[in-house]
Image (cartoon, rainbow over all chains, first blue to last red; front, top):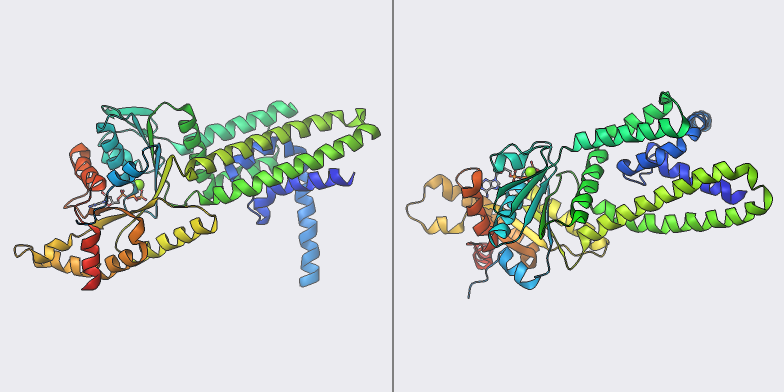
Length: 60
Length: 343
Ligand SMILES: Nc1ncnc2c1ncn2[C@@H]1O[C@H](COP(=O)(O)OP(=O)(O)OP(=O)(O)O)[C@@H](O)[C@H]1O
Ligand SMILES: [Mg+2]
């Protein structure tokens, strides 16, 4: 199960990494992965927001 | 014997060359050099494709013909020019992605969050660049020509793709292995339940591998030590020299070799000896001196050709031919540059 999460995490990093400032793939190719990531995208946005709130509390 | 330069010598040394790439900052002479070399090779009997991705349609300007987005057009015997409409290519590609999402999930409309993502990806400056590189790969893999000349976009060296190819390859290998292990493990646990999920992952992995193959092929294409000449164009000015040094450093860090540099827009030093030459021209020669000296000192071994400043902007086959002659065998020699350096 741990490996599974690891893969999921890497896939996410790969596709939306550029939004988080980790430019891994040229955007032309990132889009090719997008169809597979559709079910994850909603959840990802929420997670990012939550994390940001948390950082705000810690650093602010 | 004067130390002459010119692409003639490069081709003598490397007869198996199949691709020439002209890179460098904007406005220095990439398009002019690309057109000139393409023309020259075509007159020597090679079937040449000159490829540009400039949204400003600069090959159309220099060849004095509307070529933009029109496919491969024959300009003169053996000389074909392709000026792709990258924006259109991107748009069609993005539409195909949208369609794929709709088909995959059987939905009529793309979810807002996904559409947001697509739009931000399209708006990235690197989008245009990566689309262009992908088109380059397409053209070369069709293998219809003897020689390809690429007039590169001014905003990048494509070098990042080379660095990326290596990282990505290792990464995809790692993922494949991790996934294989996870799969073995799971087969025992709950196979049926996850079958659909695994299928999606399988496809994703395939996609990832095919992306890796594209990037690796591109990286090989531009760094092939046998078949490709990667050339930077510069002019006798401070900024251009600094940029060329930076690019050289980047190449070195990646363990690559640049084929050389083209020094463009040089006022011939012989003007100084000519009693009939107007004063303003002599002043321009003087103004270029310190930069020519710097170029000679820094890039002596790399100089492939020295192209003089022409009286007007090169347009049309006749002027392209004049530039081609200088590119092939330059009138200005390394000795001329050395003489300037000593003055
Ligand atoms: N040797 C030369 N003598 C006179 N004019 C030149 C010479 N080389 C280039 N030019 C002119 O300088 C300008 C820039 O050259 P060119 O279009 O080849 O550069 P480029 O690197 O392709 O620029 P961009 O990055 O904008 O595509 C053009 O107007 C061209 O006609
Ligand atoms: Mg140009």
